[in-house]
Image 1 (cartoon, rainbow, N blue to C red):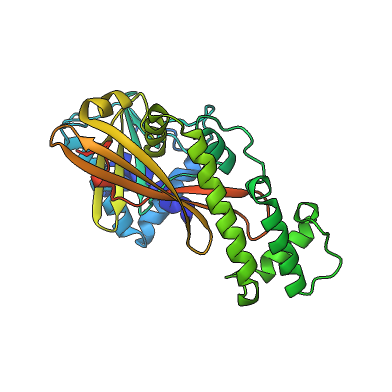
Image 2 (image 1 turned 45 degrees about the horizontal axis):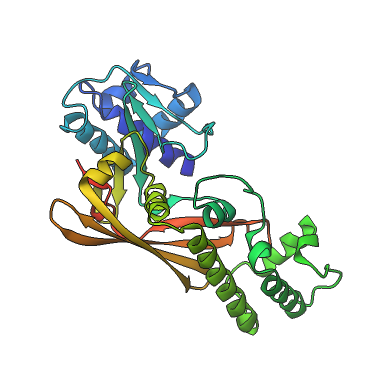
Length: 334
């Protein structure tokens, strides 16, 4: 299901940019459009089956409308029929922190397709809190054990005692895969009330020390400004975001750092430890709009959590944008 929805969101957005065809013409044709590059027979057949099923009609329509909007936009194709619509597909980029590209039009326009998601990125906690997203090293390290070993140990021992698990090691790092699977299953939902004290101590320790680590990394005003650019994924090349949020269509141009400094003055970025049922760090940037002299706040939060269940593998960090996309300093509606 998720693969089908991704195909619809990304590929059909590209199809919408074809000025001489609509969806009926495209999917009733014997072959996919010649302008479309990177979509294999497997993906195309999956798209065709989804179209013929009628189950995803509104998804097709929304993605097609986003492509049509870009075709007509003065910031986009300006009613010019594209020669190439390249789909990036599922392959992994070779470089660290690449442009978030799903489509490339005529070797120039980079498009990121985003639907109903406020997640900006999913870095390793070590890369985020130790290097402020300037490096992707130590991606497999256990951030919990790195900064809150004692609290993690206390929570783990309280959990296996509460669950009456015999033969388990004294340290969570020594858990075998079958033992991790048992803990994952037994602690699948919310933490038991009986562990609330240990959970609270653990969450507070991770949140506070993560925030302190990031604050220590962001020593200068320049560090904070660059970190804001990385959070919002501002790159040296401009690109576009097309998609949907609960409030409606989202069609944006993402500024470069050069464009940003011509439009805004970065004032400050604050990092605040928070707890919301799991370790969390809030971030809040203060920025002046040079066109209006208005001081604006752009905010978000970072969740730190096990990616495969409690005590299963190294934790991950998810960076969320809480300010609506269209109100973000660095994103301009097209």
